[in-house]
Length: 215
Image 1 (cartoon, rainbow, N blue to C red):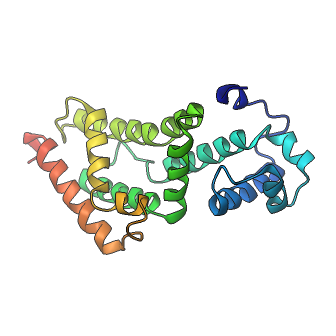
Image 2: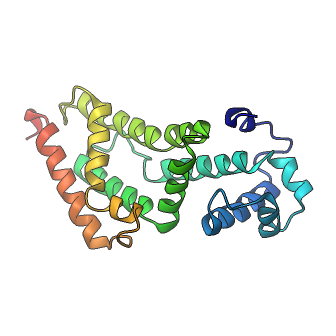
């Protein structure tokens, strides 16, 4: 059976049930401790405090379970850091808050570990990679782009391609901070380092995109 067939979602129980959340929490701890390949459904069932039979009621396999965790983590982040108010015209303040929250989330050890796992299995399980990108990076870029379009309409910014500008800003915030964590070269950065790099990213962005009338 190919990976996409294995990842077919056919839940047999309510997605928002307490039991499902219990299973997801247990699975998250196992994936973090053992990695995707080493984790077994038996290990997950024990960590979640449920029988394997109960586990299979909610998830057909560990691929589907890992996909659910990835999607949940990405959506939670999007609802937090990327909840931007288009009526907030303090663009610099909004970008500073977003950039700091984005890097703090991205550089948590457990998030970097999950990303390594996604990258490692995306080649043979492309559906997991697709779900991660659509509910993570792509959603973040889209929400920031919507905010930038609103500020362009308000006359504060002059941006021709908001999606590219949003992606550029998020990439700039990661500079010197995220890749060292991703490759286990360095621990998560301190707040002063995050503020320093994000501050540079915001100032660079505003010099490039601030509307002349707003200067």
